Amino acid sequence: MEPLIGRLRRRWKLALGLTALGLAVGLVLVIAGAAGLAWTSTEAFCIGCHEMRDNVYAEYKGTIHDTNRSGVRAICTDCHVPREVGPLILRKMRATFEVIGHLRGIIDTREKFEEHRQMLAERVWKRMLETDSHECRNCHKEEKMKAKLQSEEAISRHQRMREEGTTCIECHYAIAHDEPEGDGPVELRERLKIPLQPPRAAASQDAAGTTMAMKDQQQQ
Image (cartoon, rainbow, N blue to C red; front, side, top):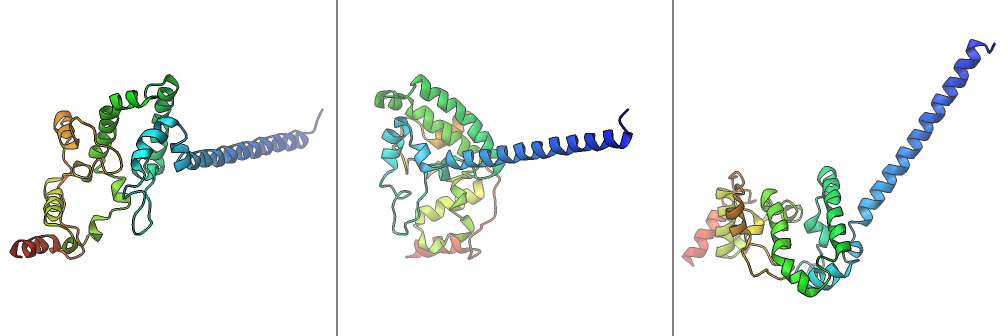
């Protein structure tokens, strides 16, 4: 009969081996998952299908988000994919339905794409209305805006954003892509009854800068 110590030693070796194997497999899956998320967030991947390359990407080329005096570009994922891990993974999971749409050829011609343009735009607008234009704010920091360099109209609208809870996409849409012929984000908010964001205090560097700049422009 095998000694007790021998049996215990063999079981410990088996347990350690299985644990090491599990850790190795887990590590490989984590690395592969991270690599997959990174790869599917590249511009090359986004325009890998002709639906995106020949339509929205062609419209994006030459816009201020593509080429500008500073040379800083905002690619597809900067505007359409969250950076936080949880929302990022959720967005990638939802993207599987877009793959199904690609395989079914739902927008595989220019004519089909134009038929769906309003629906596609509203899907993006709805998410941005609900998240307070979260992806816009990854680059555009409200507290870093210099009100004195803005137009009177921009100052007024940014003041309204702070006081009433409106959000970026309600004014800044159809910047990188052609504008649909139907309703815009404001009408979409009203139709879907999407609530406004909570009012917030002025976040400008010069505390009352927005109000003062507005007064200065009105006096000029």
